[in-house]
Length: 197
Image (cartoon, rainbow, N blue to C red; front, side, top):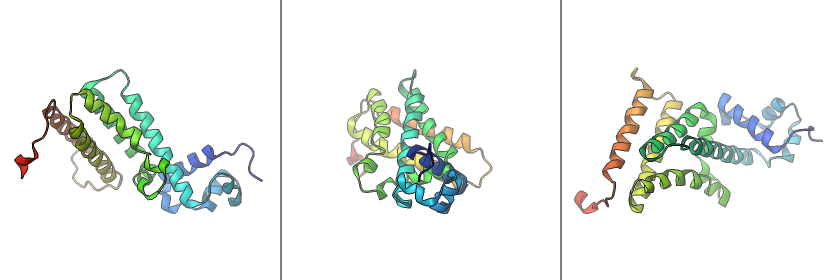
């Protein structure tokens, strides 16, 4: 019998907390059950197994960071909004390293819910870029640019890959300003790719 008051949200939230604390690779259903004070079989009332648990944490993380980015964009616009939503993503990713690591593997799950996990979130950046008079084609390229920067920088921070004592926060700030300055050069422009060939 399942514990009274235990539901799927509680299970996923506890698993997400453990992922941040010890890393998802160390989570077993037995360990999760112990942390929820239930018997392992009780978890199957809420999840199908460890792969399903990983998928649920992935979706949980993307929904949370999406909410953070939308909140960051309230009452700001233009380049200020672009910077705010990028910072919101970075802060969530570095404050939740275990969840973020799972979020990066959404393509592992072959269903519509998983495939669309990032669609709404990156549409926030896309909408902001179009409001800055960036062409649709350039918006598509810039989404990849910002995604590569934000996910890559956060992943390096979470893995303590920066050995130089220079402030990581300053490096992030400067890098973000460089990207935004680059965006400004694309206002009302199309890139002529023949210039680069």
